[in-house]
Length: 157
Image (tube, rainbow, N blue to C red; front, side, top):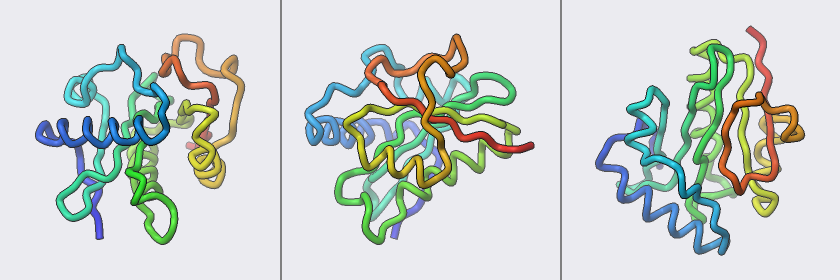
């Protein structure tokens, strides 16, 4: 069993460890060198959650505000042994962030990912995200420079 909880400062080292393992697994430099720590991200008015299984962080997701109607999903990662199958860690993390986006009145939620993350692409499509060209993103929206694919979920008010 696992739980989804808001980020707390003491989670940071374990998040770094999990992200490092995922980066080694894919042998890809997907972490943005210009990104802030999760604690700085949360202090800036953004949201971040972790999935915990047996006192270990097994997943993360963040939601940042772009404007009063637009959110951006950030740092959605799930440890290898907790992906797919009967576990619903990814879906629970996504639902948490999308529920928050709905509560905030966001009509658009964007995300960026990499071409190599095929399972993530299927997951986002299955959850009603639509792939869009980068040119359809709001002009001043920032993403990780390694992101090559972009998605949007449009909600009705």
